[in-house]
Amino acid sequence: MAKKKITNVSDLPGVGEKIGQKLKAAGYIDMMSIAAASPKELGDTANVGELTATKIINTAREELDIGFETGKEVDDKRLQIRKISTGSENLDKLLEGGIETQSVTEFHGAFGSGKTQVGFQIAVNAQKPIDEGGVAGNVIILDAENTFRPERIRQIAEAEGMDADKVLENIFVARCYNSDHQMVLAEHVGEMIKEKNVKLVIVDSVTSNFRADFSGRGELASRQQKLNRHLHTLQRLADVYNVAVYITNQVMANPAILFGDPTRPIGGHILGHFSTHRLYVRKSKGNTRIARIVDSPNLPEGEAVYIITPDGIKDPEEK
Image (cartoon, rainbow, N blue to C red; front, side):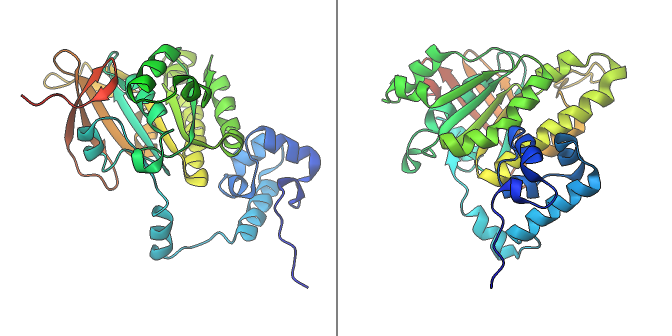
């Protein structure tokens, strides 16, 4: 008789109902989310030793038959990637189609560079059918800077010929009041992705709360450790659930740079290594913005020019 496969987190050896509830409350709602966790991360969440956590993770991986994959299998998985149009053909071309699922895409730039506006546009476009530049899914926004404006979503949706009320109903917004709150909310996103057909997660901005909660050089190590854990959560969401994760990031001036642009993104190497695609956005004349690819595993270096209009993100008119 074939061994019955385990599908419920609480049924894993060493878990049980009590620990299972803790894990589910923290966003570990299925076998894949357990299998993708680290022993320390899972142990801290479930209040169990790392040895027990390792056994739980290994069992989940065995049930899912997780191990090495051939390059062809990875290629087949990447065929499931979908792209969300940014509204600008120039920017879409730079991104080879738009903001992609299974990835974390970071836009960083100075205040007023339009990072949030791109977020508003893709929050609308994500709800379109696949053949119209969307992913036919809903959106979660973790708002760390109190920048979400429903009237702006309404404006963009109406310009796209969409029902603005329906678009707003499909966007789930959570205000993040500090770094701990932001991390807890991110850990609950996995459950909502399944329940609400979410295909896009936006974090605006990913570093502001961590920067505010950990000020000064003496707290830098603690800040980076917590930020690292938060970024792991976001990357796992992209990998496990085939969703697009779009994060914005602040910049700061580096006084040591005498020539050229002195700005550099917050978060250091930890954030730089975690973002799949990293773009630097800067203001140009008027409502014109220029996006440049800073780092990407598959996108070539390049720039794209686009404009921010009352109707959303568009291409500049050719003269």
